[in-house]
Length: 302
Ligand code: SF4
Image 1 (cartoon, rainbow, N blue to C red):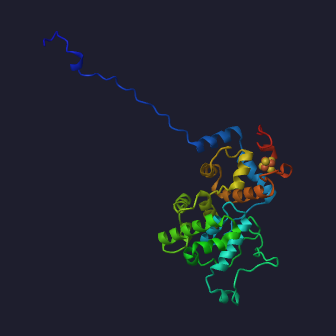
Image 2 (cartoon, protein in one colour; image 1 turned 45 degrees about the vertical axis):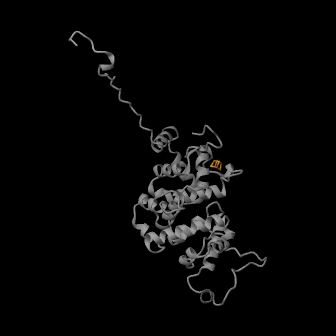
Image 3 (cartoon, rainbow, N blue to C red; image 1 turned 180 degrees about the horizontal axis):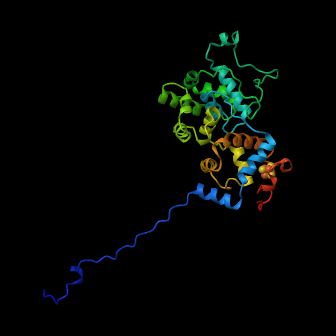
């Protein structure tokens, strides 16, 4: 083939059009996006809400309630149950799986858990979510709880509600703690940074962000904001959280919206508000100190 002759198309090397680099837009960070938008469109909303809650329910000073393992199990017991029932179930765990033989602990043999005059298991006074908590008596023997026959444990915590789901969750958590650490103590979490400690706990089967945050906030004062159903409902009604925020996002949003030293009081007062005033049904707007900024009452509230 001479220089003038043109090579047949099949023999010519293919010249590819150079592909334009595809510019991918970075996905907006939903946390940053929301925090900025809230700041711009509804300035001081978080601060005003916290001030209103303090006006209604007072200032809160952090205080440890229980050892972290008890707090963990109590929080599992309170999932989708009233706190007063969870506390009752915890007391029954103490009774059924004591650290000392029961005769020694109670001064005499008992055949079954104490019952009230009407034949029902007596309830301890209402506590956290009730009023006074589970008291300061010794924690149950966690090894006995972990190795108890499942149906026996289900029976032991039945008055707390959802026992068939919670009993295996409790045993799985205790098993994971023992296998990972050699015992059931969680005191070491107090020496870890907040997110590191939360990540350690949420790696344990059955422990989510809310449960981990409760344990860390209440046992060590770790600056984390547990978002339970009351906090979520109140926050979405006021407009602090987006209406469709899923629980994991709600936790991250609150970490960005609050200062570390605001988290304990914010959590406790928002829960109290959800329980006492901003009920799921018929919220009592009249006595609410944040009513002028609440989007549930006025969709155009500032
Ligand atoms: S104004 Fe009503 S809906 Fe809004 S936070 Fe208060 S009680 Fe809840």
